[in-house]
Amino acid sequence: MKIIIVGLGKVGQSLAIELSREGNDITVIDRDESAVEEISSLYDLMGIQGNGASYSVQIEAGIEKADLLIAVTGSDELNLLCCLIAKKAGNCHTIARVRNPEYSKELGFIKEELGLAMVINPEFTAAREISQALKFPSAIEVNSFSKSRVDLLKFRVSEQSTLNGARISDLFAGGSNVLICVVERGEEVYIPDGRFVLQARDLVSVVGATAEANEFFRKAGIVTNQVKSLMIVGGSAVAYYLAKMMLSLGVRVKLIEKDLKRCEQLSDMLPKATIVHGDGTDKDLLMEEKIDKYESFAALTNIDEENILISLFARKIGNMKQVTKINRAVFDEVIAELNLDTVIRPKDITSEHIIRYVRSMKNASGSNVETLHKIINGKAEALEFMIRGKSRVTDTPLQDLKIRKGILIASISRRGQVIIPRGSDVLREGDGVIVITQFSGLNDIQDILEK
Image 1 (cartoon, rainbow, N blue to C red):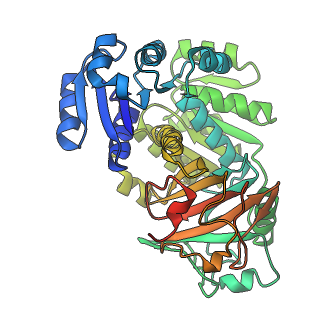
Image 2: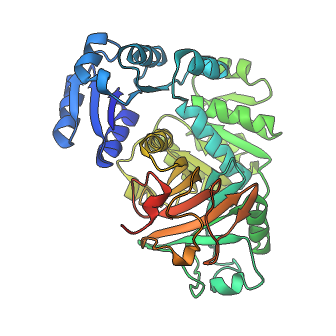
């Protein structure tokens, strides 16, 4: 596919690199000549310096033959203008990043009137992912599929857990509609069979219907109740959206922000929250505001180092659920060794949504990528395919399909029922299928088969 990306910020660069690696013909546009030169010299893509909303610049970029334009500059209005011009000049699909909360209630109207394929708000999307994690505080990561009917939950096995030393076949001896699909142990990643024995500090990913997963965790002695109180440090857009979501669920919210003007704005926008003017990196202030009395804590400032430090302090203070927002990926290996609880990267969440759409555009065999989540620090993917027609994978028992090594069929959704597949199960037209894969770039359900 020929794709034009306007804007070379964190999201634009990430998209350009990932989509180029997946074999797409990428052209990037940015006003910053040095940014254009740097990325075009490192990767197999074309770079143009200029205004992405300019008709002549888009023509130079090949808009007339483009399949998709993605506008992710720092300006919402510029992104929308880029997409509008692209629709007129090239009649291609368009995606715009729109971040301003003032537009949040109008996104449906904007999308329809401008003919956009997608409008994405990274901060809102990140806040929604955090709220999912706070509904299940024992999970480090929560990814939802099938319109939130199926969850992929990652948690760490503690020394005291009944799962420590347990053989997987023994855990499910009485039958269960959940599946342990991935185990991370140090640098090693396993797709375990029934003989696998879990150990303390293992990171375990479980997939299943929401109710079934909750029951599994309850039997394992793992807390599944939603948090009732939340302290947030930082008055960012993510913090605003998160506070609003949690307040609607009846959660008590306190938000600490050091900019007085922003505090006044948040007080008007979030009348049910407690807004505190102060420096959230000051441990004395945190203690004064009774951080140890809260069931959850979210570090959502715009400075990664501050978020990491105050999350580590929160972990030391009490046994609370912690969420840390990270914008840069420079020190991912170091961050992983800190064993932070839940880490949220808005840039990656935005990229996942857009890449999912690109792959759906590319498929031509009747199965769409409905959901895509990068897992295991980007080393693997969890994808949901919707099977819209008969193909080589349908109506044949899974045990008879030649499925590539490194791929696991984790779940089948059929007419509202969630099935954890066995060898005798078959895929049918209309099914939603969750696939765990160590390969990147799967566009169609048939890509799970050996070539």
